Image 1 (cartoon, rainbow, N blue to C red):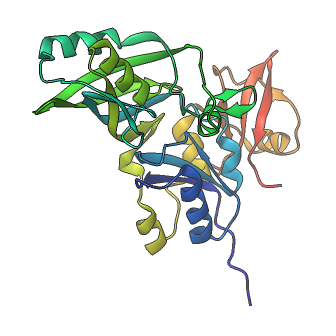
Image 2 (cartoon, rainbow, N blue to C red):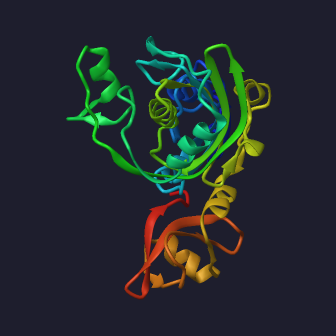
Length: 296
């Protein structure tokens, strides 16, 4: 029986469904594309939906270098109840009547959570405490006290407010730095307003340069297997580009030093045929390969 040929290298931008872990998505993509060489960048919680970036074959080498430091979410925040996990999947630990919270107080609370913040991650986050994930310690019955860390919320826009009895729901758009916990924003907003709050729904719409417009559902990928971006397209989309001549391309393939390209940060080096050879940086007047992407 002939083995299914390996897919070409590149990125698969998935519109993750709710109820699946990021690892579940990788496992299904592996079955669909017929390769184990798939990894993901920018984990999403099981309840969340939206953009999840997968690297396929040699493109897994890109995942640690992609500038995925800015992310955008559409979220629903429920005021009037705090939960053990700061989201809708956790047990309610306190309730209060949020009907008296005015629009002005909500606006002020949102403004206070915009900009550069010191945020305490959710106790059930994936932050490591002495080498063990915080959520694993919580599940084991331990009390977890995480230190605050710097994050940036570039935009925190209120899109709609719904008032239903003692509960208030806010639809918001959040543009933030990597490492920001949206459920911690929901928790802190509810705490600041004195009524408690948690994250009721979350959808990630962008990760770095990758958006929902490029994302496909897993069902669509199964119906028509294929990548969202080839390796060449992915590097061109995510990094500055340096095109080199044939002689220089040969030098790069053989690991030899070439003159600096005069570009800031990490950039892609492309051969005359438009195929990416490596990610590189300038150092001491020469180009230093960060990761070689050309096939061996």
